[in-house]
Length: 400
Image (cartoon, rainbow, N blue to C red; front, side, top):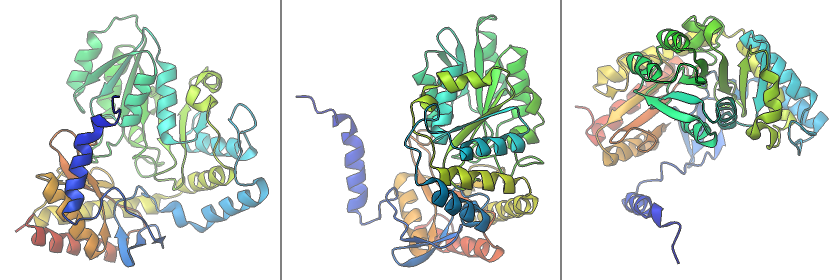
């Protein structure tokens, strides 16, 4: 009998060899206690968190927590149903109203996760005979949305406006086309040239969907994302995002001004056939979103943190994924798997948690430590972080 798990044998062997060296499993960290948006206890040690997507530090906001507790008391722990059945409570509508106000759009639709938002929107909008044109480095949820639908998939080189135009020019003029872009790319923290890309998409009659999962909260005058900062809001048809990053809870959404948008509630399978978010979750999300409308000081502090950490790591001699600070994500590039794991372990032992990333999450041959800053990181914490990187880097031999 064929072992259906045999295709994973190489990965199993690689993981066993890694753990046999005595290092901790980078993908099985347990937070014993989380004490703030920026600190936790891991194996009994105070640890600075530099590997979460808690960009705006909303997870411990008193108003957000109070809203969740109130909804839990008044509506119970869950809906036990889909949004199109018994799963739409007043809180879900209030959350969608908050999104419409935040983005200034006519329509908003809340999904149970950000992954499902991409899965549902992309697979439903573009069908058989249509084309989806996407960046080669797109998130897994975007690729899975493409594969769930029946559209033709066309990839273009990462962040290449020229290659995007070349691909679009080859497609039938009368075919339906959806260009899918991301504001911030989550591995290197680089941003898309949305102004140029959206102009090219519109030139060839394509609709545009922008994923602002990592841009919402601190890009643009109102914190709406890179598309707002690029000045292309009027030409973007759909904006997809998540509550699990700057909003500080869990869930996903899409906002749009398309006049037929609401029909998606009847035809989008990952929306129709999934239980809706618990009342406490949508209550925390709505409260957080409304507070993010007035978070200019948080955004300024986050950008200060990002620029300081980026420059500090460069000054220490580390190679980074971008030449300057483009977002709240900073990628420390390392030469191989062994060095990356040793550096990750050394940082953890010093009291700093970062994300370790390797293929297939990254391009082939690319290994890195991903740092995700938070608006609640203090100046002193950023100083501690730089000191830990210096100490670990020297111990491992990454820097002189």
